[in-house]
Amino acid sequence: MNNSTILVTGGAGYIGSHTCIELLNANYTVLVIDNLDNSSEESLKRVEKITGKAVSFIKGDVRDKALMDRIFSENTIAATIHFAGLKAVGESCAMPLEYYDNNVNSTLVLCQAMEKANSKNLVFSSSATVYGDPEILPLTEDMPLSATNPYGRSKLIIEEMLRDLPESDKLKNSTNPWSVALLRYFNPVGAHESGTIGEDPSDIPNNLMPFITQTAVGRRKELSIFGSDYDTVDGTGVRDYIHVVDLARGHLKAVQKLLSKDSINGVQAYNLGTGNGISVLQMVKAFAEVNRVDVPYKLVDRRPGDVAACYADATRAKEELDWEAVMSLEDMVKDSWNWQSQNPEGY
Ligand code: NAD
Ligand code: WQD
Image (cartoon, rainbow, N blue to C red):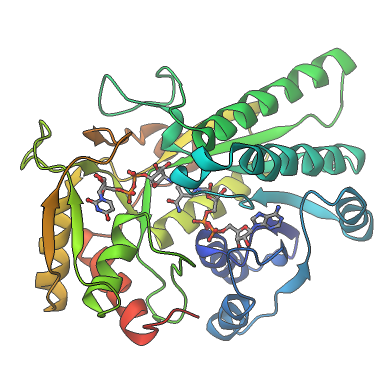
């Protein structure tokens, strides 16, 4: 039994809400801060229904320094998972300053509050985007990092910023040094098996899976498949899709590691992926066959900035966090559809 409190920033969002379930099921007390810019409080009500446990919710912005100080002074936070941020690549090119403010500045304010409260266990939502256009696959954590857009650059800057913290601990001979897990997600898809929570983009989806589900449910006429002349199995882009419940369990494992005797000494990065590359056409076919539903599509030009293929080597997460993805492609397409068909308009 444990009832340590975990602060979850952005906990009302897609990955955050699924992670709250895993934390509650493992008997952690969960405190969420979210400004609801890209989510609805309804997701947390459904998390409470699924788990039969309460979530404490603060509607607020992580960039609000006074609020963050108050949260850390009023609660004993064992660890923080920092999901809050903006995540649309195209939008980040049009409004880079908003992205640096929301992503970098929120992390800065959060870490200042954590340091002040001497609460220095952090799990950070990074992304496979920090590998840029990969030359060698599968990707291991020590491969070269680069950014191809402001969103990716914001994640890289944050990773670099977090790496400076343990160095400062050494200079200060800190007795409670920072322990930070950088979780680099590949392509999250799927939803909780209940079908009551899932991904609910507020605009036209940028990502493949919500576009497929919204097409299947009749909200979009057809899927455009971006590029059919890549050097891949069938010419379409290849990605490492990971079920969001597997991903959520990765966060639970990271928190458990941070709170264990064998904690992370400083900063460590972990790839969270399955290691399997799936093409767009393979995904569309699996979705249509498993769910017996039509997904009209057309082949169009490549999307600027896309890479041909990207998939993980997740060995380090297995060895150090005792985590690996266990859910199948069938689970991914079945659960994505279960959520969308039960909630055609989202929350
Ligand atoms: P999401 O938009 O569903 O969740 C993010 C949540 O943070 C939202 O509920 C939003 O309202 C909240 N938020 C944003 N800015 C905030 C702020 N300043 N203060 C308080 N709350 C704020 O996105 P998600 O897919 O759950 O992603 C979570 C994290 O994982 C993000 O940091 C994202 O960059 C990262 N990530 C996502 C993916 C993906 O494909 N979904 C892949 C790699 C990394
Ligand atoms: C997957 C594949 C597309 C939509 C992005 C971010 C990355 C990370 C995850 C946050 C590609 C193809 C897509 C469509 C299509 N996010 N596609 N038609 O681009 O791998 O990664 O989300 O960190 O940073 O860049 O994901 O889902 O957009 O695309 O053919 O309508 O599906 O070309 O091959 P991506 P995606």
